Amino acid sequence: MDKVKVRPLRPYEQKKLRRLKRQKTNAVNNLHARVILLGRGGIRNRDIALRCDCSAQWVRILIHRFNEHGLDGISWYPWMCGCGRAGRFKIDVLEQIAEVAVSSPVALIGMTRWSLTKLRDYLVEQKVITRISREWLRVLLRRLNVRWRRTKTWKESTDPQFAHKHRRIKRPYRKRPNGGRRTCVDEFGPLNLLPRAGRCLIGKGKKVGRHRATYSRKGGIRHLLAACDLESGKLLGRFYARKTREQFLDFLRWLRGLYSMSETLHPVLDNYGPHLKAEEKAWARENKVRFYYTATNASWMNRIESQFTELKEFGLNNSDYRTHETLQEAIELYIKWRNGERPISRQSWQEFKRQQRAAG
Picture 1 (cartoon, rainbow, N blue to C red):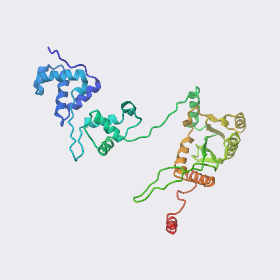
Picture 2: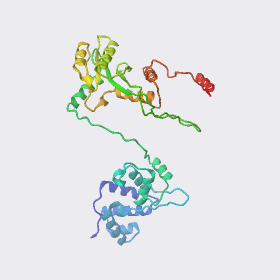
Picture 3: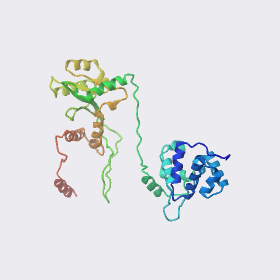
Picture 4: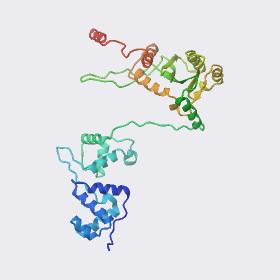
């Protein structure tokens, strides 16, 4: 009876051992995996040695290593980092590189993000690899589908009425109320006269445009009070110099005047102070307007937020408007295109080329 036996296998260990057993290019891992799997299958150590063409003493050594250190105790990966050519790594080494790359850098190196240099130094220090260039590491990560991604913050709602408000808003989103018109209302701004960075296409030999820097902004601000009509899909809005109860009530009157009084308006609003005043609620009852308030810290319930994201991307980013009139014109041009009220072209291509030749 054998005194040295293989301990029970964990599910991931059994899966990994079977994969190592199928390796054709790494005979060492193939042999070690066969020994452990046969030992766990109830085969005597002497019979395992005969099947695997090794000594019974080596079988016992491998079983001891596996029982103490797991898969790391029996795995072996040759490193081939020839001078003057790219290193060639086995699939298990590549998997370990990818695993390290997507692990928390705070826990591993005490920093908030990886760089290629820091990742390379860490892999070498931990003896995952002997050496590798930054470019080859970048290529390997790309082949392993490891990409840089931006992180985002997420704020959980602390509203005790969250579930009730969520269900109340979802009902009109799912089905249009009888004799009603669904809208989403919110404020966009404040809009300052300042240069905004963005992205643009650039050709070979060209230079990216530069925007001025501003340290004092004396042009004032504007606010866009907007509504998204869920029935027609149109985006509506008006500009105001301030954002108080008077401006909000004026916007509601303007929005109410766009539709027949036979229809009841169902606007979705956030919990901004002017939206909660008694005057607005009294006016809403008299003019067939029914408010739906989002939960606290849950502005994502209001579908107009996604419209503001596109408006900012295509109307404001990569711009440097010097007056509020030009800023307002740019936003109105985007809204008109968004509503299908104008074609995409504002100027013909031939006319634009003639102006460029005249200016150059």
